[in-house]
Image (tube, rainbow, N blue to C red; front, top):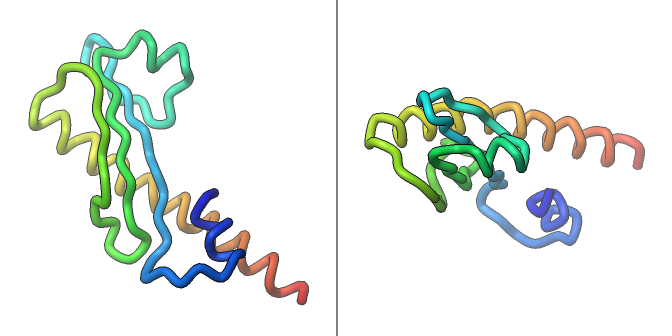
Length: 100
């Protein structure tokens, strides 16, 4: 929602951005947008910030143990999930500015 606040404030940006968090439980199951309990019980928690143009990685933060393959799996899942976030952004902005 920070990106929408920046748009609303008129801050010039080349692209919007969003964050997506993934948790890996003890058997390697990937959970997107985990609850606090799921994060606490997870073997690893990975958060990615992605841009709206190419879903390029802008930033990441991780905690716990994971393999390179799991990192790539989480990044791919986050990139796919970001499409839903960016669609929400577009629809929110369209609703806001179509009323003017």
